[in-house]
Length: 132
Image (cartoon, rainbow, N blue to C red; front, side, top):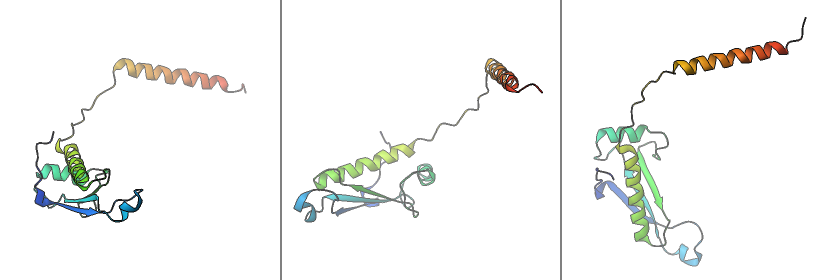
């Protein structure tokens, strides 16, 4: 669960028309929600902002704005809750710093096994040559 809270005034929610099937009602009712959240201008801690802005596949515009479209449900309120839930899911992803990678060395046995395999393969290839 996230420990960071995003104030309501930093998020812009707009009701828009949903795409896809829905009959005649889909043309009249704006049940989808578009959520806009400016990561750069937010009050999030700097380390979370930096991770979010520099992460690959972060779903941000070049200006650092996240745009989410929630249209999974038929009602506007359900889509609003879904948009907030998805925003906090993304925030959770960047909240924790990634573990630092520990450099490892191959064991002596694995190195010997690899060298023996290479030698065996070399002998096999040498036997393929026709006698001169």
